[in-house]
Length: 211
Image 1 (tube, rainbow, N blue to C red):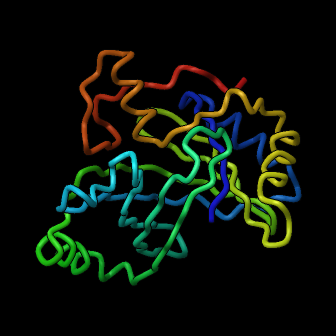
Image 2 (cartoon, rainbow, N blue to C red):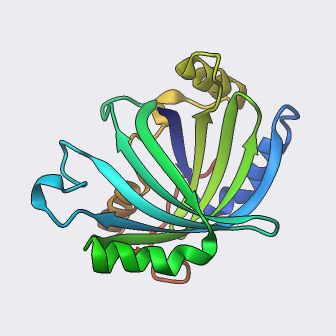
């Protein structure tokens, strides 16, 4: 089970957000990583991951850092779509980054999964035993995500404690996923919606600043 909450801000808020998070001495900075995530769907209609009854994402993610890199296969499914603080089913498997091409071959040519979306981002991580706070740099804006990591405390209590510390208004959080935010921005700003979301492409932009 994963419990988290997220906020979106403009790209030019990056320095303000990084500097703000660095003020919290109880958080340890884990570094900044490049990530590329591929999202697949099931070939059978009744198992469509994007169906509202399932509402899940099957993902292959490459994470590349200066010191460590990895590849992960993940399954993530929202359990309470109407809540601001998300409770999600999450299962993860880590493999060697060198096996990425073989994994993609098996998924597409043997299991016949369909690659439906792919996106790039940079992730900066701040954490301690109770919480992980990440700043994700998407081509269209920034996402500040707060996730419970405590195994002994109530998950929603941890999230709310850190919302208070960060002085964030829970009513301004975004309920849905990155792709929902991206599509919403495209529709509002008259941009073409791409299934492959990369830096340097023509992207809409989050306009709300952090300060």
